[in-house]
Length: 197
Ligand SMILES: [Zn+2]
Ligand SMILES: [Zn+2]
Image (cartoon, rainbow, N blue to C red; front, side, top):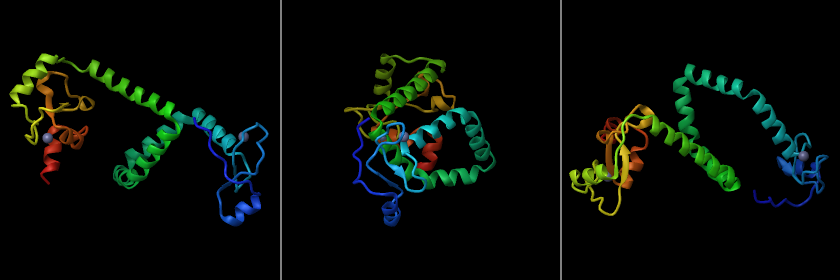
């Protein structure tokens, strides 16, 4: 992780007066972190972060179960909350990925691995030949919008693997990039219905 540049040195009183949430007082904490302090309690932000994650690791199962229970009991509010938080979450993810390139690439790998193992467990298998045949059957056009896909296409599971779809060629279609992005992980029918709204 890249070393963060520290802001100019100031006292806690100055930070309070300036309405800052954190300040850098120019000296490391007892554990030697050259990091900012929280204006509220003068604690080192790195120590606080470490304490939080230690607590989280201890209580993870509990926290996750609690969140899950709330979501199940409040499905509508959960959906609304997610929609409301989507832009901010995306921005936060992007920033986090920038700040933690290694952990980001690791989490990508993990996600890909999960996807691959799901694919391995899904019944059925297609080959490059099957895709070639499909390409001709579709007359080299996107299965949804019929735009030419001669220059490139994406292999899509009509019924997503994550929703119990198979890996048989009958469940595969070739989409242009923009249709594939728009479809996401929705089943084909759901996507078509939503598109025609
Ligand atoms: Zn510290
Ligand atoms: Zn298309």
